[in-house]
Amino acid sequence: MLRVFAQAVRTPDLRQKLLFMLGIIVLFRLGSAIPTPNIDVRAVKECVDVQREAEGFGLYGMLDLFTGGALLQLAIFALGIIPYITAAIIFQLLTVVIPKLEALKKEGQSGQAQITQYTRYLTIGLAVLQSTTIVTLAESGRLFPQCGEEIVSSNSVAWLALMILTMTAGTAVVMWLGELITDRGIGNGMSLLIFTQIVASMPGMFWNIQLTRGWGIFSLVLVVALIVVGLIVFVELSQRRIPVQYAKRMVGRKMYGGSSTYIPLKINQAGVIPVIFASSLLYIPMLAAQFNADTGWAGWVERHFQRGDHPLYLAFYFFLIVGFAFFYVSITFSPKDISDNMKRYGGFVPGIRAGRPTEEYLTYILNRITSAGAIYLGLVALLPLMAFNIINPGQGLAFSNTFGGTSILIMVGVGLQTVQQIEGQLQQRNYEGFLK
Image: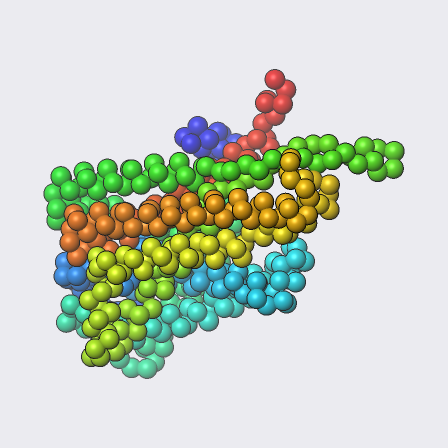
């Protein structure tokens, strides 16, 4: 990896892209540290410390992870890239059920540009909704239940509306910065921004573990994180290659085809999306309980889901991840479409007839791989959570949000993807391998 980055720095146009990407990341982190108007910065800092020592941030820990700490600091980039991620997932699901969106997707680049524009509109709408929720919780004191201080300087409608407008505008700026990286930098801009925020949260959490639990627990946490990283790298680079042979065809007076290739099927075909789905779904009852704290069912939800160490929470979390993994793969990978495309261009799997038998064969292979990938995702998400609950009872959810499978899965995935794109661009500029 270091060799790849060294070669990229020595290449003028790649160096320019890397410097542009780093400049955008610096601006992004700067906006994550600027507080929203009408916020008492000192009170917020004290409340964060009190809440962390008391019971952690089980409800908002994952969201705060994706914002690099900006959410609980109530910065202008408090929502980060969360609304865009939600909007993109929603449209990816709607593409399957709405014929018009499916037709746009099949139109190619023009159709995808239209879907992207719809995603931007939905992102702004979700940003308004989410910022209103955060501001309401902060104004009412339910954002930090263990803290009695007032963190909002004024409760007037005008000031609260300004806070909502600022956070919404911050989301729009973050979305624009991510698209700039995608267009003029290297890698996927939105993924790199999430990567940046997760990495930014780690030093503070590591130092907090060392201060509160000592060097022994700190070393144990480091070992657990390295084991999870090794497991994720191994599985993420693993794939099942299905061979495909293309028959020779005579077109006019020329012979085409006769080549062989393969269909790469990753073990983790769904990526980190099922974990995000499952976490979001489990946060819904906890968020509802925040607004109905005096009811009996809210107390039951708090006892079983708030701390993240109850067996019922762990079981729900695991089965939701497995279920969403199968669901997401089924809507993003179509064996029927692949089989039809292979048949159209004269391709076939050796030993399997083209058409329906090929579709059934691909479905069989995909189900087996998805089963292994879904169990892998569930274990990666749960094992760090269980380990941290043993290390620090009651705070496992807070620690696992930063060092758990979800965050490390995102970092490893984005890191591998970015390095692969840099290598691809380097190969386009270096033809030594073809001349040897």
